[in-house]
Image 1 (cartoon, helix red, strand yellow):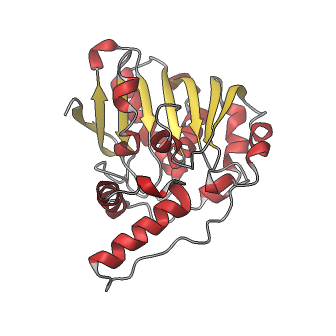
Image 2 (cartoon, helix red, strand yellow):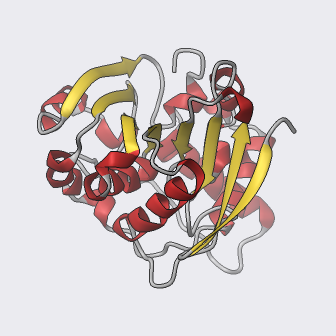
Image 3 (tube, rainbow, N blue to C red):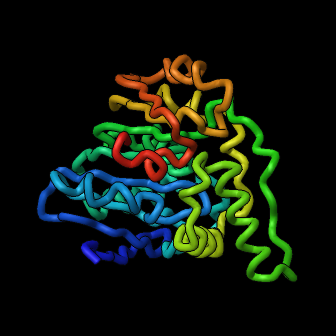
Length: 255
């Protein structure tokens, strides 16, 4: 209720942004993960907005933002992201935090339009050629009961997003179901590649990394991550203990 909802018309469709403490300036942009929306940051927006304006985007094709024509994966969303940033901030370079799929979109955008990014914070991003296959994910069938669908959402949250089962409440399951139902990006493949290794050489800003120690995507490989980011200006790399992939939700204070 403290956010201002903005519907931004761009050349690639309508984007929905939420902003907290707009008057504070010093914009901090938050990009959520796959099959998500701005509410991947629900535990972070108020603390982060104590000192500065926090802008959380529903990534085009996810949440309430329109799917750009022909867009199927992260690289297709880089130009729409740049359009949104330029419409909101003009030529001002801003700090941007990209979580998971959002960090992948950010990586492509920062390679194409480096002047738009002042600092980049990557959170649990894929596309570094290290991601584990998550084998215990489950899919949906048309004839499932509401209870069966909820069980799949719970399974998938614990398979990839969270390590602490006590966080999976009825409210969180409802939020997850709402987010997944609005995911119109159906052919995502880049996350399983090493695309960011090639994009990073075009970044001109300083880069910071934050990962959860128990991130299922990187189990057994966490120690290899910093060397995968030697092609950019990596200033810091932090691993938060006892937190999974969705580190900013599971360990909000530490994050």
